[in-house]
Image 1 (cartoon, protein in one colour):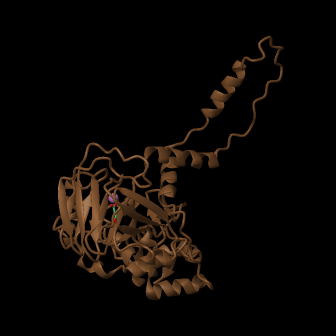
Image 2 (tube, rainbow, N blue to C red; image 1 turned 90 degrees about the horizontal axis):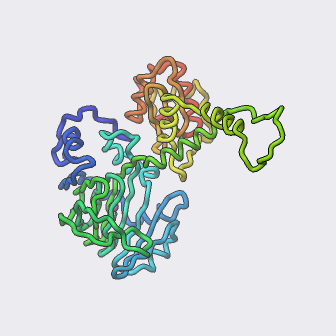
Image 3 (cartoon, helix red, strand yellow; image 1 turned 60 degrees about the vertical axis):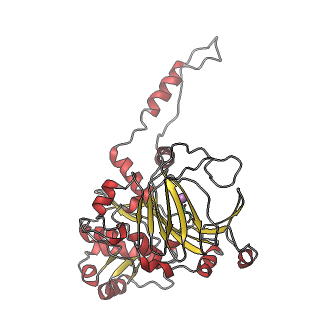
Length: 384
Ligand code: SIN
Ligand code: CO
């Protein structure tokens, strides 16, 4: 079950080395690295080599295998068969499994520990398994990341760096020069926060796992591209250029001025207001990742049975469900749903905490329960 969101961001937490979320965000977020000893000691036993290799064998899971040979790297994309791992050397390779939170409750709960940052900025939990000497090489990422050490030890060298040029001709992004300011060995449960564009290189000392709690921030070009797609699907400019009564031309290659005016006037009708943009944004941000499929219940409860079940046991969102909101609407897996007239506070609570208690579920008005029942039939949420 996902952890509920703690509302008190003024309380210090071991997760952030005794900082409050408020202080962490003011001092470190997007600005400066933070090394936290003993941030989450329990995570160490979460993912075994076997479990990660099993995930990497699935075709709905994104995985990569990086093998280093001196200064050369090779990269392969999954799915991988078990035999692949048996044929690898004892040193210098790492398996990276993306989106583990979509498949494992503990990884989902881990991601939600960072819910002091809006869900719209949270991306996923990637888990890597490395044999001694394994790592992805010195590089930088475009996003903030928390690197949490599972079992085994890893040496991290990291620091801000002006020259972010990359070595050409490699299948992975490797910095041409790497001059780390810091050098630390992370033990199980230790965690390193790095802001975007911070150079870093983690090399496994023992066979080890690292959980990367990753964030996302839309690039302006991606935002514009997605918006133009959204707009294209909603354009309704009926009609066509017409020119009855034209006179013969002696310059047939010349584009008629009337056609130009028509194009200018028609395209000026392509306007959008703030509400159109914010609805687009909510839909975009709540879009599930491409490899996500939901499992609708085989024999769904009818509405009355569903209401009885959630009143008895409560309700929780499926870990693959993206459920966001703003003043205007609820966004469920890429679709905007204008707020129903009643039950808004409870639905917002479900979006924030990703679960409702039986007592809260019992207070849901009819419009809200029918919205939830529709989501349940799609496999987006479940009676607890
Ligand atoms: C890793 O887990 O080896 C790589 C994580 C990172 O450097 O972003
Ligand atoms: Co990185």
